[in-house]
Length: 372
Image 1 (cartoon, rainbow, N blue to C red):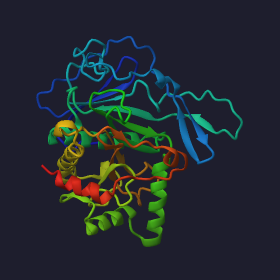
Image 2: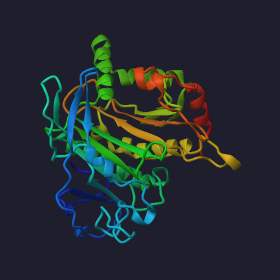
Image 3: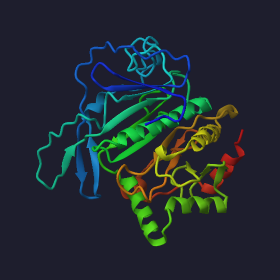
Image 4: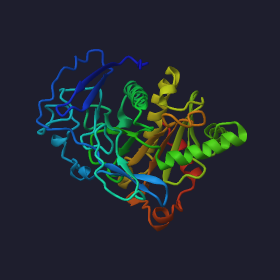
């Protein structure tokens, strides 16, 4: 794939055979020739999938992830460049702009073992796929919201590059780009980073969205995502911000205490299909949205609270439903107030009956007021 931004792409191999890819957007960035000298042994294989017949979905069993790195101090961060800490880094070079590498503790991997022996009723399969880490910056103390628009544009191109590359694999049915931020969300590393999952199946939430989109298209001949966006823009009460190519809005039936969808005005199935102008504006609109979210809650002394969030790109599966799918970003947070989390308790966790304590219109109005 040809990157549409001024980026130099360099592919190398880590000590255990995993792939690492440098995406440099700085003109003076040196050649990436550093060698990973760690003694890692063979790469970790992914586990296996088990089919949940009650709900018709798959569960990945990845016991090897129990021992993954958990909230190390800054000087032991494995995502900082080599030489910046007291432990060996996953990144051999002494600096980087954006880097992607295969996760050392993968949920899905090109190497996977299905060691289950069970009757036919208990369906199972090797968890073949891909699990990648995306480091947005070498600066351990930064956040996505503090990146420059130039760097965010690079990350957008990286997401598109990896979506296209993984989508070409016959083992991958869906590509999911996301960022978890904050211990309340469950992050295990503080360094600003995201992940990309290449699933060997279409996950349940994606399949549900696809089913609704297919039904709507069959009934109306239109895209459900486009009709929802048009309705939100026409109503206006939940729109947070809007540009030439993108609109951010709190969905009418938002589930989370803070939830915003960011959607392109043009019908595109995935990140790969975005044009230069759409990617350029996305870099600025997304930063604007994240910075508003970081001012949403105010703590003691009137200081804003950095919002813990999940930012999830919903895009078309690699080989099915692409004609009815429509790209959008979902940003959601479990923080309903300073020191107060929304727990997915009995109703949400057991039967999927969501109850929200916040009115979407109130959330949208506050976010509109938080513009720079």
